[in-house]
Image 1: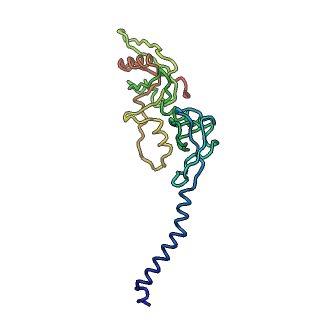
Image 2: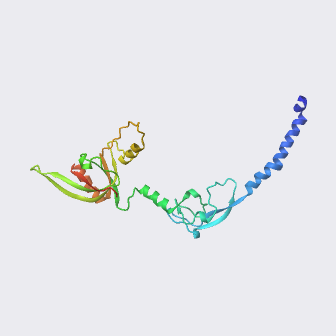
Image 3: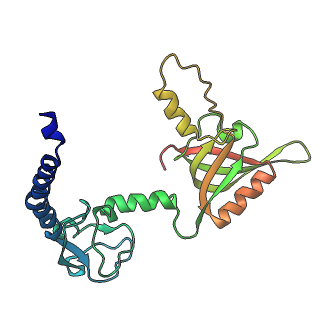
Length: 234
């Protein structure tokens, strides 16, 4: 029996059987899968990012199914009404991850723009004292009025409201950590947590116009900036 397994004729016969199996069973399936096609959706024109997809922007075409990723869009219904997350170019196939709902796209743009519209900016100021920053109460999203406090020669103080209803974008501690983020971590921590969460406001970030930014910077440099809390919801 051992001699039979070692014989050239036997080994050759095994090779022929394997070759026949590959030729008649595996290869036809392989070529069939390569020749199979699927209907895919393509754009007929350039579509800028943020554009709502309509049916007149689309066409369908046959494409080879072999090696085609599963995220390819195969019907108009998957695309119409969604928004192009990035610029799409005429003739390109559509992919699901290049489309977003209008709500998700607007939320994404809001996050990227940090809520800034034309003419708006962010400015970060260092608070001259804990009381000027409303002690430990001030948080992102609050609405405050801004006052200028100056000491006169007779030791009296003059207080003037400079800006009204200013939006607080963020409040930071001395390590430039957001107090809102720290509070969230503190609330999620276990009762055994001994971390010292520094919730003292040292810097405040305002969303404002350029003129308002100039006023805020002037008050910071003069160390005469004081805030009063007007609303906790911006």
